Image (cartoon, rainbow over all chains, first blue to last red; front, side, top):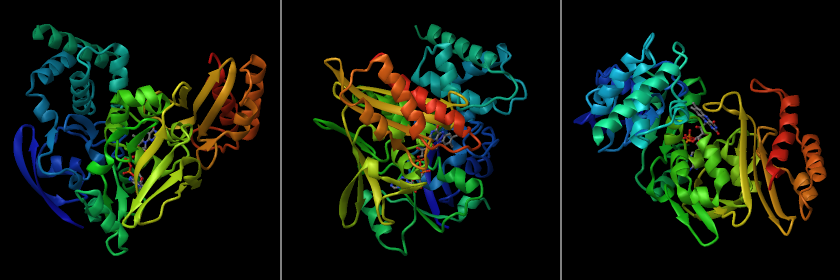
Amino acid sequence: MSIVKRTWTVNGTSVAIRAPAGRRLLDLLREDLGLIGSKESCGEGECGACTVIIDDEPVVSCLVPVGQLPDGTDILTIEGIEKKRAGRLLRQAYVECGAVQCGFCIPGMVVGSYALLRKNPRPSAQAIRAGLAGNLCRCTGYAKIIAAVKLAAARLAGRRK
Amino acid sequence: MKTTEHIDIRCPRTLAEALRLQADERTRGTLLAGGTDLMVQWASGVPTPVRATSVWNLPEISAIEVCADCLEIGAGVTHAFLVDCTQVHRHLPALAAAAATVGAAQIQARGTLGGNAANASPAGDTAPALLVTGGSVVLASVSGTREVPLDRFWTAYRRIDARPDEIIVAFRLPKKGKAQERFRKIGTRRAQAISKVMAASRILVEKGRIQSVAIALGSIAPTPVRLSEVEALLAGQKPTPALIDEAEKLAQASVRPIADIRSTAEYRRWASGRLVRAALENL
Ligand SMILES: Cc1cc2nc3c(=O)[nH]c(=O)nc-3n(C[C@H](O)[C@H](O)[C@H](O)COP(=O)(O)OP(=O)(O)OC[C@H]3O[C@@H](n4cnc5c(N)ncnc54)[C@H](O)[C@@H]3O)c2cc1C
C-alpha cells in the first residue's frame, strides 16, 4: 500500500487529502469527505450512479484510484453542482417533469446532465440519450429525464441572452 | 479495506520515470491507465497485484501528432479525446467512430487507446479500426523503442507482443488518404455494451476498381483479425453486386466465432458476412 497526500479543489473549496493511492475516489468522497450524494450502485462503471466531474470530464468515481489525481485536480460532485445555476435549473426541471422516482440514480444523472449541457448547451433528444447512456435508471424509462434536460437547457439558454 | 487499497500504486510524472520503474523487477508494477478495465477486474475478484505503475496523464503519451502521412496517437489518449479531435475524424474516421462506441461518456473520459489495445480483448472496439490502417504500435523501455506492426501485435487470446518492461507509447497510423473508412458495431444496446461482432474497413476505389482493401473484424476469433481471404478476393476487382455476394459468403466461411454470453457462433458468423457487405455497398 502507498499513501498519497494531495491538495485538490472539491466543489470550489481547497481540500487536503491523505489516503491509500488505491482508494477509490467514490469511497474517499463518501467516507472521508462526507459527500454522500454520489451513490454506489454497480461498482463496475456500468451504471453511472457515482458520476462526478473531474477537470471538466464526467467520470465514474468507483473506477478512479485517488493516487492518479495530482495536486490541483478540480472535482465537482452533485453537492457542488446543486449550487450552480445550471444545477439549480436541472433540479427544478427534474422535479417539474416528474423525472425522479426512487431517486438512487438521480445524483449521477444530474451530474451527467450537467456535464452534457457544458459540452452541448442545446442538445437534441438524440444527443441527450447518447450523453446519458452511461447513467442507468431502472424506474423512469428515461422519457421524463430527457424532457427535464431539454427544459433545463431551454431555460439556461433563454436567460443567457 | 477495499481490494484496490492494498495495491502499491506508483504515480510517476514522466515517461522516463515510469520506464525506470518498469525496468527493474523489484519496482515493476501492472500498468494502470484509465483503469476502466483493470479497476473493474479487481472489483470483481481478479487477484490484485502487489504493485501498479500509473501511466495516466503522462504528458509524453497523451497527445496526437499529425505527420505528413500518418497520425501518431499517444497510448494515453482517451476515447473522449479521439471523439473530439477533428484530425482523427478527417484522417481516421473508423477509429473516431469506434472510440465513440466505447461505453458511454464516463468511460470514454477515462478509457485510453493504449488500454483498449493492451487489454487485448477480442471485443476491444478500437482494434479493427487500428488494424485496417496497416499501422504499427510503438513500445518503449529503458533500452529504447521498438515498432510492431499492428497485424502482429495481438498474438493470441488476450496476449500482445510486449515485454514486461515495455510501455506502449503510441500508435503510428497512416492516414486514409482517398480511401473510404467505415466502422460498424453490433451489440445488445447502442451504448455501454460490449460488441457481439464489429467491423472496420478501409477501401480505395479508383477507376471503378478496388485498388486497395483492408477489412478487420472483432469478437469473431481469439484476436482481432484482418480478413485476408476476403481482401484477396476483392483486390483489383469491380465492386459489383455479384462480387459483394461472394465476399459476404467467403467472410461467413472464413471466420471461426465462438458462442458466449453475448452471442451465438451462428449469429456471429452470419453477422460477419453482413458487416462485410455493409463495408462494400455504395462505395
Ligand atoms: C462500463 C464499461 C463499458 C465499456 N465498454 C466498452 C466498449 O464498448 N468497448 C470496448 O472496447 N471496451 C469497453 N470497455 C472497456 C474499457 O473501457 C476499454 O478497454 C478502455 O479503452 C481501457 O482503457 P484504460 O485506459 O481504462 O485501461 P486500463 O484498465 O488502465 O488497462 C487495461 C490494460 O491495458 C494495460 N495498459 C494500459 N496502458 C498501457 C500502456 N501504455 N502500455 C502497455 N499496457 C498498458 C494495462 O496493464 C491493462 O492490462 C468498457 C468498460 C466499462 C467499465
